[in-house]
Image 1 (cartoon, chains in turn red, blue):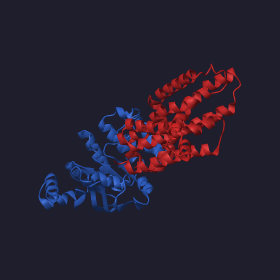
Image 2 (cartoon, chains in turn green, cyan):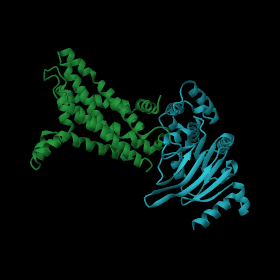
Image 3 (spheres, rainbow over the protein chains, first blue to last red):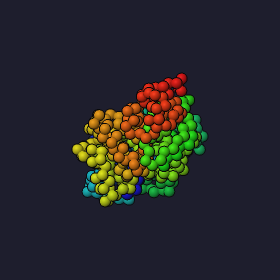
Image 4 (cartoon, each protein chain N blue to C red):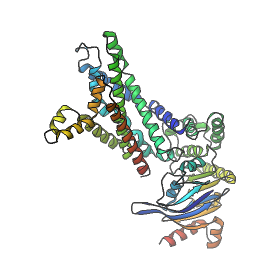
Length: 243
Length: 239
C-alpha cells in the first residue's frame, strides 16, 4: 500500500468511526427527500427524478462545505498536519487522498438516495439514461463544491470560518447561473460578460446534465474546476501548514 | 549522518533560526538546548522537511532536505512537540496507519508492532482511542510511531515532556540503548536530561548556536553545574 492509499483509507474510515458520517447522512437524506416531495414528486405524475436533482445544488451549498471544513482545518488545529508532512508523503498525495476519500463519502451519500430511483422505476418507466447523467452531474457537482471547501479548509485553521467562506463561494457559483441573477447583471454588463458569468456557474452545467445531455464542455468545466481548486489547496497548504 | 549548513528561517520580522550549522554522527546523542523561542523546534522542523529554510541546507543520511525530502523523511523518525496524532483512532490503528504510510506491510508490520509496543510500554492502551489517553501515554505513542521503522536518525522534540519520573527514566534508558547505532537529536529544557542522555550539547539562543560542546566539558570549563552554565551563556550572549 502506498502513502496515498494509506491516507485515503484512514480518512474514509475516520468518517465512520465518529458520528460525523451518520449525522451527515441522516440530515442529507432527510432534506433531499423532503425537498423532493415538496417539489411535487408524486403530483407531477412523471417517472423522473427532476424534483430531486432540482434541489441538489442548494442542498449541496450547505452540506458539502460541512464535510469539507474539517479536511485540513482540523489537521492544522490538532497539529496532526505536522505528523503527516514529516512522514514520507508528498503534499499532492496527501491532498488528493483526503479529497478523494471525502468525494467517495459524498458518493456514498448520493448512492443512498437509491429508494427514489426504485420508487420511480416501480411507479413508471423512467429514462434510465437521464437518471444516470443526473447522478453523474450531481457527483461531479459534489466534487466541485468539495474542492472549494477543501481550499478554504486549508486556508483557515478555524472550521467555522472555512465553512462560511466555502458556503459563500459555492453559493456565488450556484446563484451566478440563476435567471434572476443573469437578468440583473445584464442590466449593466455587456452580453459577452453575462455569458461568461453564466458559463462560470454550476447551475448551467448541472442543468444540461440533468436533461441527459452529456457534453464535453460540461465535463471539462467540472474537471477544471476540481483540478484548479485542489491545486490551489495544495499550494496554500504548503505555504500555511506551519503557521 | 546529519550535516546542517547555515540554516536560516524567518517568520515575518522575526528571525527564528539564524545561520545554524552543526553535524552529528552515528552513536551520538545531541542535546539541543535553549530558552523558549531560541529556534530549537524550527531547526528540527526544517531538518524533518516540515518547513523549508529561507537559506542554507542540511542532509540526513545523505539525503538533502531541499532536493530529496521524501528520502529524508524515510530515514528519520520524528517526535513532534505535542505528539500530534489522530485523536479518534485507536493506538493500534494509528500505528498500523504509520506502517501503511511507511510501506511496512505483512510480516514486517507485525514484527515492527511487536518490537515498538512493549518497548514504549503501550501494550495496556493498544485498543484505546488516543483522545482518551493521558499526556504521558500520548507521548509514548508518539515515540512508538517515530521508532516503528527503526530509523537511523531520531529527532525528538522534548521527549520526556509530560511523563512522570518513572516514565522519564524509562525513556532516557531507551534513548541510551538506541544511541549505540543511531544518531539522535533531543531538544529539551531539562538540563538533568542532558547530563543523563546526551553525549554532546548545543546551546542555541535567538536562532544562533552559542556553544557546541559536551556536557562534561561545559561543566569543567565553567566550574559550575549545567544549570548555571546554561544561565550564564544564554544571558551573557543574548544581552
